[in-house]
Amino acid sequence: MSARENGLPDVVTAPNLPDRVTIWEVGPRDGLQNEDSVVPVEVKLEFLDRLADAGLTVLEATSFVHPRWVPQLADAEQLLAGLAKRPGVAYPVLVPNERGLDRALAAGVEHIAIFASATATFASRNLNNTLDDQFGMFEPVVSRAKAEGLAVRGYVSMCFGDPWEGAVPRDQVIGVGKRLLDMGCDQLSLGDTIGVATPGQVTALLAGFDDVDRLAVHFHDTYGQALANTLAALQAGVRTVDSSAGGLGGCPYAESATGNLATEDLVWMLDGLGVEHGVDLDRLCDTSAWMADRLGRPSPSRVVRALRG
Ligand code: HMG
Ligand code: MG
Image (cartoon, rainbow, N blue to C red):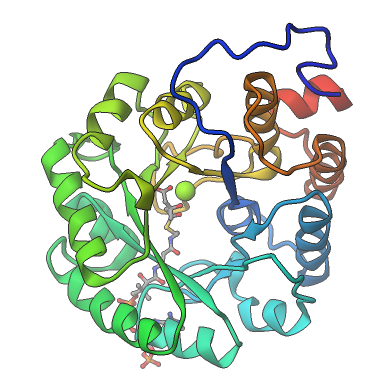
């Protein structure tokens, strides 16, 4: 069932919306990195298959980070070896440093994402690095990856608030983001890691970048603002939105980070607005309900709960 099939009027009321949005599904990575238990690799592979069946075309599959730092994703090599890649589906992975890139290249990865911090405290806690020196870690990763023909995304975390430093100055975020773009990242994803942003702040941050076509947004939903923030981003010209099936997610190194914007909640809103996305909501809800069973708790997605109760 969609918003329109539910009897809602078939009208688009919000201005400046795109015809189509690319959904960048982060559930297999951001979702599963924060689980208390390690999900078996067979379950992860089935999750990826089901997400592709539901029509998602970008599946952030795993991370080649230090296995001691994120044991939940320590099976990255095994996962890639077992993955039946679908034509037309991209499977980006997180890579923090050259060691991670070596591993990703050996596993046949074609698309990577580096992940920088907008704040010094999170750079230290998440990357064991300083705000300035993180760029020295990423530069050889980006240049080698580009030379190998890989697509490269750059994340900026803590774009709005940081649990240790409080409000993050907009210029600091823009400075970090522009350095990643100048380094050669094809796309920049602006992350509200702890889910504190509100729409006016999103509009203000996005206005600080010249080329909105290269921007994506990544909202965690701690304060229930992720959908409103997404709408603000779409109206500012963003065409790629990160979300997580069933609303799984969080960062083990960020206090108070909760789940990502749920892909189902995003799809429901896009359907209501008449924005194309290519996802089959029923299949996606089935997948999130199936994964919730594997994890032993209900899906945090409002739409999954409404439709699968
Ligand atoms: P470190 O301990 O400083 O690493 O960690 P090091 O460079 O000092 O190396 C120490 C040892 O680790 C060496 O081994 C390296 O080879 C090995 P030794 O020589 O001692 O035997 N090593 C590795 N092994 C496997 N894979 C690697 C790797 N790198 C080094 N890639 C490091 C630094 C960056 C590796 C560590 O801090 C790390 O892995 N951090 C990742 C944390 C993480 O994954 N956080 C979650 C993702 S970010 C997020 O969720 C936010 C996001 O969703 C956006 C948002 O929400 O805003 C993206
Ligand atoms: Mg995240």
